[in-house]
Amino acid sequence: MRKLLAAALCLAATAAVSGCGATVESAGDGDAKSAKAVTLTNCGKKVTYDKVPERVVTNDVGITELMFALGLEDRMAGFAMPDDKGDLTGVPWKDGYDKVKWLSKDQLTKENVLDAKGDLVFAGWNYGFRDDNGFTPDTLKKLGIPSYILTESCRNGRTKTSRGIMPPLDALYTDLTNLGKLFGAEKRAATLIAGFKKQIAAVHAEAPAQKPKVFLYDSGQDQPFTSGRYAAPEQIITEAGGVNVMHDVDDSWTTVGWESVVERDPDVIVICNYGDVSAEQKKKFLHSYAPLRNVSAVKHKRIFVLDYVDLVESPRNPSAIARLGAYLRTVAGQE
Image (tube, rainbow, N blue to C red; front, side):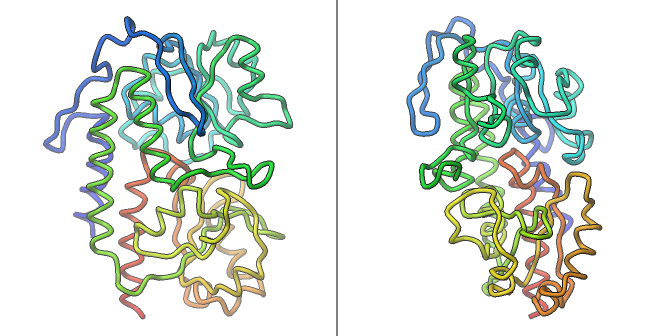
């Protein structure tokens, strides 16, 4: 298991660092500065960028690390994120965090962007963009600042706020491909995607025949916040060899009722570790919450922890699949 995890971490790092027997192209596959306008499809719409951005502002850890994984630190003016999103030092992109300015440990604002002289904002709905505070792509457009929306967060029109238009890993690959095209880093993006697919295929090949049922617990006591079929945990769980018990929810991150969790009786609960409530506190709540007493995952103490950055769209998704896959194999072996 340790060898598999080491290989997984190595593959996840190959596009950001040399080593592991791999060499990777530098971020600029071509002369990006002399490139003409680039048209991409973002959230189902054609968007044209008149020039290659040179002062990108990002929101949140997964989005920021997508830029780092592509070697685009020099194209960034800064990022915003709380400081509770997991380990930022023991990752292949540590140099990016050392080089790029941390603009805010709160929500990204237009003032942050203007102060940083940003020429592109890379964020997502509920990953920076919000209607309630007026920080939206349309608002930025009026200021002459273009945006790129994280594909995992694209609104799908089923409700006013529901998100997700494609399987989560497809969203990850779409964003890497689009960013590679925009910044002249297509070869690097292709190398990352090929490495991720190879890594995930290796985990999938070892998946147990009997797939454990998995519930993702993000937060909340009255109603749990969890992952539907369009958030990254959906495919992290399935590619690791499990079944997301909320697969039928046509949304990304959303709330459900505890009664539906009890009814679906997950074999494993995955805790999303971040925020003021620690993973250990969340675990204690799950064990103490009376309605969950007879749920298999609670009864048999099958609770696994992944960091927030593992579970949102990010270049850490393949490593999370490998780690969860190893755990699910042990669970299947106990059945």
